[in-house]
Length: 326
Length: 260
Image (tube, rainbow over all chains, first blue to last red; front, side):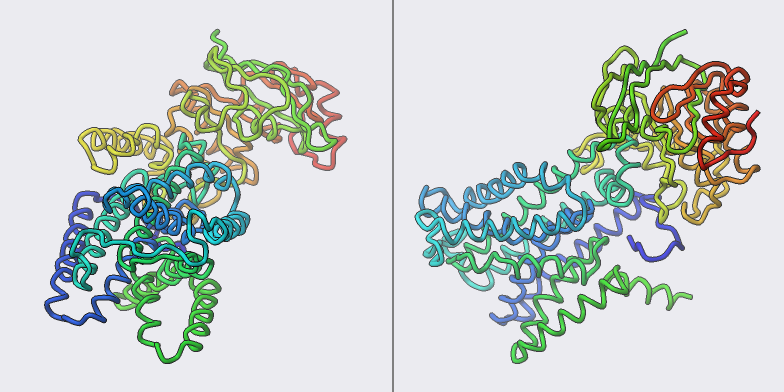
């Protein structure tokens, strides 16, 4: 919900059933369009970009949940790495089936979040940012240094497909689509539920919310664990798509990208990370010849959004829509 | 009378400053107890210690025969001990109705999975909560502004909204931290009437404030706190005539009007 202006005030769930139906209808429509897309644009490049956007949407959406509780995590790519490595290692070294590997990856990320969460989530705003930034770096260093297990800088290779024969761009696109749609459905539904209401309340006025009976730390840790488990899932899928992982995929820049997707798209609206993921993945591909401009563009966009328009692209769209209707 | 709250020897120090230094008192069911004292006396710290916002370094808090010392605020609220905040504590960007809905969490929340899948239980609790919210809007005189942004309300109504949010948690004992600070005389009367109605509905109230006239006109008993310790206690007219109380107020930089 927009947090820039006081009027009109935002009433949540005043008409829960019709709004829920509307969201469901839009969701189904978008899913169908995306499912049919490969028949229209049967181009390996577009399918690969599509799969990449969809995978990153998982990361952006899962981070969005954490941001909605008021904590901007700069370690999200680190947890992706934990998931990727746990998944790959369990498949390569323990011989489990890839789907079980995915579950193990998600569980590993979730477990680390459960251990670290109760400590770091007691930190406020900027301290949380700093500590998660460090945490991301620690994870990356562990992946680099623990060579006997992780393969160090060489990473892990010869990772199989998620399922025998599922190695074409088309197959990967559909896997990514299914995963992204499921994660999006979960996140949207969660944010529309009473849990989502409590999350926003915690972020907006934590002391008042705690005195209303909401178990704040328990809620924050629970959401943190869920968000990290989901991005661990993305890590596992990434491993099966690229058949190779190394520490460089899960570093500071990647964590920053996930944050930027949320900030640029809109930090407090679930459509924000979706839009942000499309924007941030598609734009570099379109600007392939102009790598330097990309970085400058991102930096400028980030500063502009954070300094003057914190509701991101979604906020901008809402404002324009309101102006048109006036 | 039933003893709802028993605070015994509670204390906390911030560095060298003994903000609250061994305060002991009881709150009985059905009364309105006032805690007064000059600014800096440790009144808000006392409320913070009781309500779990700060962990006391010594002393105990017993609420309805259960030791709750140092419990987190949410756990105390579950047990019926609810507090409000001195600085306007509402969700400014949200509507008045949404504010009270959020206060109604304990009534409304059916469990993580239940609310995720909108089960019949979830719907039942939501309906119960909506009815409770409508009732509170009416009783607190907020129906007319139910859809206005909380931050756009006049300050007095925001304070009343703060009380309404706390009432949504169905307290047995409600602790109001400086409910009329910064209000005009008219707004102060509005809040006073609201508090009396709260007591009528069966909620025991503890009011913390430094405004002598407001407290004296509202409370059954007073506890006077100065420099982190109890100065005296008793009925309002006794206490306000006590020379030590007058000195405690005149001796500080903040002199409040209306001293008897």
